[in-house]
Image 1 (cartoon, rainbow, N blue to C red):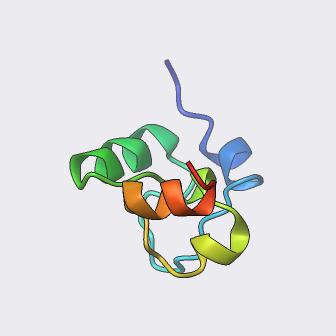
Image 2 (image 1 turned 120 degrees about the vertical axis):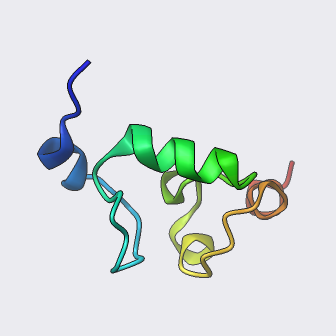
Length: 64
């Protein structure tokens, strides 16, 4: 499967400026899951800006 990096960039919600995986969803997801985290697109904007991508932050954000 080909990555649609340019298309993905248009809707990427990650605010981390230096991210080398921005727009490369497969690499982003792999990176975060390996760190027991979720990518920015899983969080509401106010939580995403904290850069806490933990599963716990996800549960708190969505009150699970």
